[in-house]
Length: 160
Image (cartoon, rainbow, N blue to C red):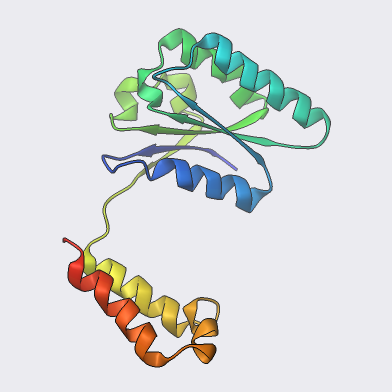
């Protein structure tokens, strides 16, 4: 799996996505904030991930505001990324081409997240109600009226 960088101006959607990646791949989850973590903390998490790897456990390392890491801090991640000690998921509100060192960037897949519109949310909820893997499985024991009102309310109150 390639390393991920999420570029977004949305309020904190990247951490839950990184956690989902961790859960879906059966890896342990660690998180750091570039606002409060230094090289010591980065190396500590990498060492923990290295020990886990010896026991067959892999680690997803999420770094929020990765663009705020200095070149030295980003370089401290490089060996762990190259040697697959951690799967790095970084989040930034800046353009990663200018704020993430090229060595990390060249080993990353950059995804730009965008807000959903009310119509997008409506469609997702309708699909979840219709699909037997989603709310559709629960609708057998719940009234159709509840499903309809559940689908309708978020779309009518959501801002585009």
